[in-house]
Image 1 (cartoon, rainbow, N blue to C red):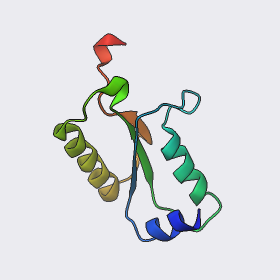
Image 2 (cartoon, helix red, strand yellow; image 1 turned 30 degrees about the vertical axis):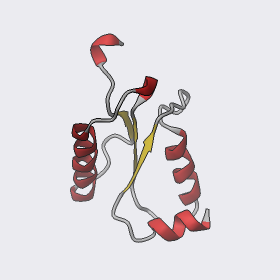
Image 3 (cartoon, one colour; image 1 turned 180 degrees about the horizontal axis):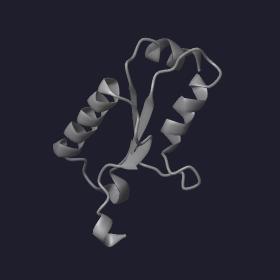
Image 4 (cartoon, rainbow, N blue to C red; image 1 turned 120 degrees about the vertical axis):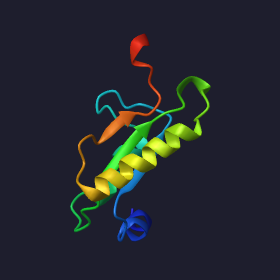
Amino acid sequence: MDVIRKVVGDAAVIVTLDKNISLGLNEGALCTEVKSCLYNTDIRTPVIGFMLGHGGRDIPRRNIRMIIDKAKQVIRSSVTVESEFADLRGELV
């Protein structure tokens, strides 16, 4: 926990990439763990998580660009969505 706190202490935003889903929380396990490391500390860096690459799918560059753009948006304004699927095809759900 101390290592994570030290690394992210001066970050403007923290982005996690998960290839798993914690259905009860609707976020990936890494996202949940990073948030728990910051809980009850004075670090108030926003944490946003993206779940992608499920089923062995490749992660295309456009998804990475989208994630970077969303991180920049969080820096400019605030968090609107804490965790989301980066490559979910909504029409198949």
